[in-house]
Image 1 (cartoon, rainbow, N blue to C red):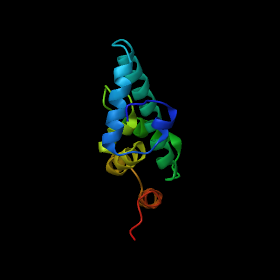
Image 2 (image 1 turned 45 degrees about the vertical axis):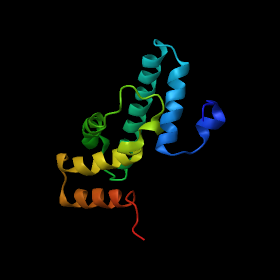
Image 3 (image 1 turned 90 degrees about the horizontal axis):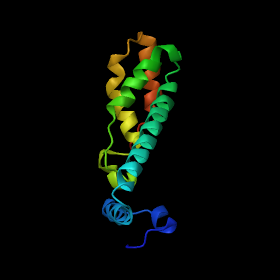
Image 4 (image 1 turned 30 degrees about the vertical axis):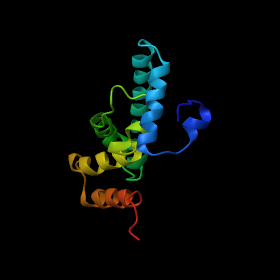
Amino acid sequence: MGRLDRENLKANGTPEEWKKREAALRGKLTEEQIPRLAAKVREGQEKNTVLMVRFITQSFRLPEERTADWEKGLSATIQFDADMLLPEAHQGKGTIFQRALAAVESGLHGLSLTPEEQAAAQKGLEQFRPRQR
């Protein structure tokens, strides 16, 4: 587990294994590099969150001018650990997709919709929810 290379990083693993990988990476970086890398990782996570929220809300088929500010507000509610170096080591709160979907679902009441638009939004959300087997 001590090796930190591309093969190791691509491999799937348990949350504990990802924490070990993150600790190994942290051990190879200088004190100056850690906050810079963490900021870049957080920036990437935030950008991906905005894109994921937008992807989900596009399924509502509402005009962008009606949802743009709302989407930005939703994306801002999703917080990431400030010291995160490997996102996979911080999946306790869910993946970006899971967190974006939860934010859209819980924030839907903040958007003034007609009954038809509300039905379209629920239909759009339904395609992203896990299916019961």
